[in-house]
Length: 147
Image 1 (cartoon, rainbow, N blue to C red):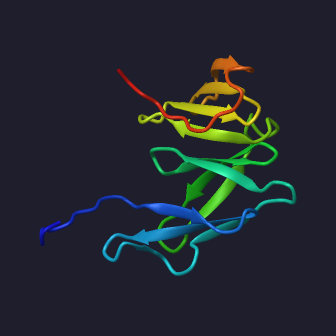
Image 2: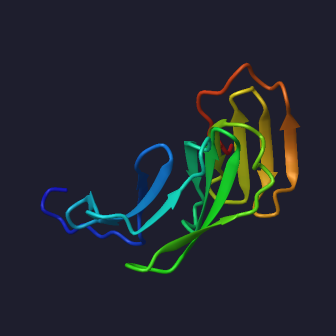
């Protein structure tokens, strides 16, 4: 950084909080810190603590794996008026997904369950591209690689 100007475009959001509470903070690129208070919050119902989060490259959608399944959230608003809505999602009752990732272009979502079940979906239609119930014993990490 050697005294040069730093230019940052776009808005970065972060998640934090207890396992049953999802909080969205804005990120200040000038002092490289999150806001002091959350911009939006969501309280999960009992037994639905979050496990993992995958954010769509657009930043407008994210999928949250919980102990019971997955939830899809859409972000609305800007700056101090951010809201998110929990939407119906075909992965609501699949159990916890240990790994989730969107492709770089946002056209695919991959999930790897604690039970070893691998799923690859077309986004946003959620058309199943690959469905392998016994792909692995378990997943640790997942990413897309293009050749």
